[in-house]
Image 1 (cartoon, rainbow, N blue to C red):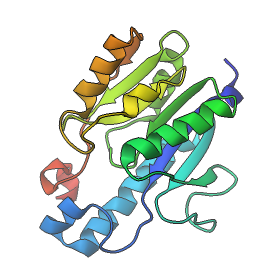
Image 2: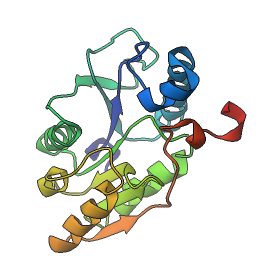
Image 3: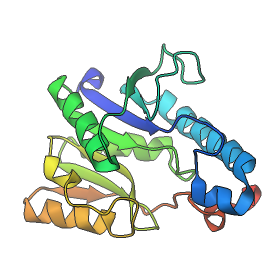
Length: 198
């Protein structure tokens, strides 16, 4: 598949003190939580930079045209919708309506995510309807599709431990083929941090 038909969506919360990683901040303080969030964002930026696909970063509050996400490497959009499901659904729909043939979405919460896993995700979508990267907390760190499946964003309790399983059940019910990636750890609480950051 042509690389210009593959899209990586990155969901990014604008890094403002007191507005990122609230559960982590409750344990380590707002300034340290923001510093860790920026470190996670830098990791995500590094592993996605060399992936030979189109990349669009979707900001939570406002588009920052002068930040570390260089405009030459990342196209920039604003998240639209009232909850996480609506926002992701809108982003995927825009991607497929723009002519992309495989679309993956990630956030900036997973320090265990690698460039190899991203590459494998797009390779998998050449012969599968969907790919999911389960997070240890029951959510997912990556979702990818080779066709738009809007049902995956309906009737979910977002940010809870049921999201990944409910999404898999949807795929089974809709008779969509899917591939599971390795389970990785998202960072939401202090206990999720790797040892060198504790």
